[in-house]
Amino acid sequence: DHMSTYDGDIEKLKSSFIEFLHNLPFYGLAVVCTDDPGVNDVLGDIGRSITTYGTNDEADIRAINVQFKEGTSTFDVVRRGDTGTVSPLMHVTLPLPGMHNVRNALAAIAVADELQIADKAVENALERFEGIDRRFQNLGEIKTTAGTIMLVDDYGHHPTEIAATLLAARSGWPERRIVLVFQPHRYSRTRDLMDDFASVLSDADVLVLLDVYAAGEEPLAGADGRAMARAVRSRGSVEPVFVESLQELPPVLGDLLADGDLLLTMGAGDIGAYAAGLPELLRSAPSLKVHS
Image (cartoon, rainbow, N blue to C red; front, top):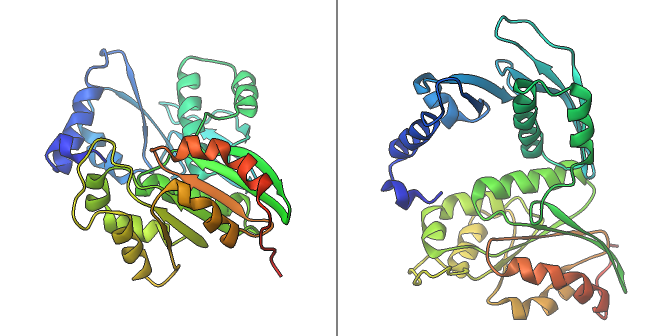
């Protein structure tokens, strides 16, 4: 993402991360996720002490026995010290869904372990952690005239983030139909990552695409919401519905939503503010379809 900063050169991006890590003092610690191929590419170039985390067998801080149920992730943590010794298992209950949140928790555990914070204190803190605004933010079960809709809002606007969020929704609520409303952010990002967007967006059960939130950019030919809809449609997995503006969204949702759906709004533009008002809009909708 933001590859223009690095002249579109992935090697420059990697070098920037190495340079950043070398700002650490000689006694500092780099905590890195070795589930990420890009991290593994630069691991040997980091001239600082390193603690690795992830779900792979080689990670110093590793999650095992991962399970998801609705909005909760549970897992055990195996920690391997410098001498190869293994600390007692930690048992974590995290009130957030998704493997990406499991990895985020592992990073926090790695830092806490370095600071010698007691395991029980870490477990208790993670169990009470409610997440942050616009990161799989559960806005509630919205009761409508025709049933109940679960509403989730997320800031994700990059293909990797979208994929992680959709996977979290699928893992936690496998019985629900996922209705995704996505607002692309920036024409340049839409152009550069069009194929990746088309791939991950095709995983939704129902897809509504808004036009691009410009964020100060001038429009680019072939890099708007309609182009994205065509790219998704060409894959044949889902038939996207294009909606030009948020103002046109309510009747579309009225036609598409059904009792029991998980409605997921995503994007870094003004869709976040719109999502905050959706509970009231859904409650006042005259009718919604009901699954037969």
